[in-house]
Length: 95
Image 1: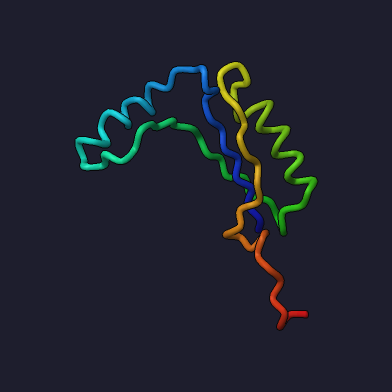
Image 2: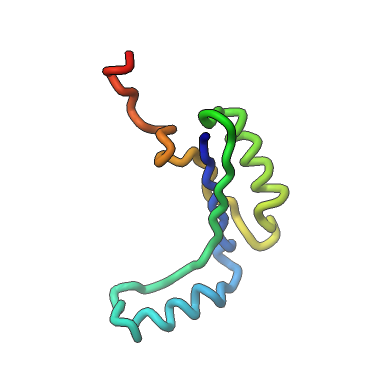
């Protein structure tokens, strides 16, 4: 089973009240090294077998048409999840 990760973020010019709320609370918890927070969304799509270029293309189209609101959000990445071995180097013992 392969997994595709789609990340969507609000456009830079759009207000991000959730990110602002998180930023307001970080210093209260002792995290004062951060200067900003933007909150986005992550989707995980699974497919049978390994992730192919066709799967990634379909996921990118789905991201633009369904998973994001193109008026206020940008699809920032559509990638095969490396945790599933998609980007792992081939095992020389299996060759």
